[in-house]
Amino acid sequence: MSRIAVSGTGGVIGARVLQWLAQSFDVLDVDAADADSQHDLGGAETLVHLRLTREVTSDRVRRVLAAADGVRHLTMVSSASVYGAWPNHPTPISEDLPVRPNLEASWAVHHADAERMVLEWCDQGDRSAAILRPAPVVSSGLGGPIGEAMLAAAPIRTGSDDPPVQFLHLDDLASAVVLATQRRLSGVFNVAPDGWLSPGELRALLGARPKIRLPMPLPKRLDRYVARRVGHAAPEGLLPYTRYSWVVANDRLRAEGWEPRYSSAQAFVIADVGMPWDDLNARQRQYATLVGAGAAVAAGGWAAAAWLRRSYALR
Image (cartoon, rainbow, N blue to C red):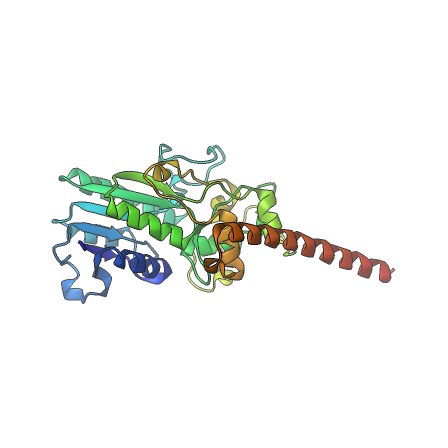
């Protein structure tokens, strides 16, 4: 087993991906080392950086890269949010689209800054880097901060805005990180399921829950709503990412041999209601997703009928 150094291992994403990496590599968890030795990457020629948060910003990436003199390859988990969410975006977005994060979303800006640092680091020597840009990451229980925020915002619509959405299962991100590290991929790669959820498909999965329509402008109101739902520090500046499409294509990573195990619908259901998908095969997961969507639509119809009966009874 070759040795790799891994940083950004805190949180749900870091912990899960670290488990996957440990199955194929001798892993040095840089974050778990004491403060005096965090600059020592143990002679590793490969470095993996897994996440950015409010606490672990692009400044942390700068310090990690400063300690990576002997590293020849880097795999970094960035975010598809670096493309920004703009009304003129194509659907889906390919890696050729320029990076243009919405400035009010500091989390997206930090990811774009970190990518720039990595590219500059590669230019300084004979080095390669795989920059992974995942769609919002979710899993049963907790997911990534962006994924949790987008789940919380799913029922919200502002005016006529009703964009398609994507959700990436955490295990699919983990498999992408392992592949990029094993094969020392070089370049930028979107990480996303095949396709996305149309507005109608998302409404079916949401079922009988009320759709929340808020007046414009409401950036702070939306951020406060999501923060209450998530229950901890959530990304701010979410408004454009709920108004416009930023779903991405996965063709480039698929061409390298990666395959997603979960669709956006399956990832949404797993994260939203915690269904035991890991014990089901692909056909069973697809069937359960369709049944869940049908049940949600039926529940919505039943709720509407009950409301009408009560309304007529009161007349």
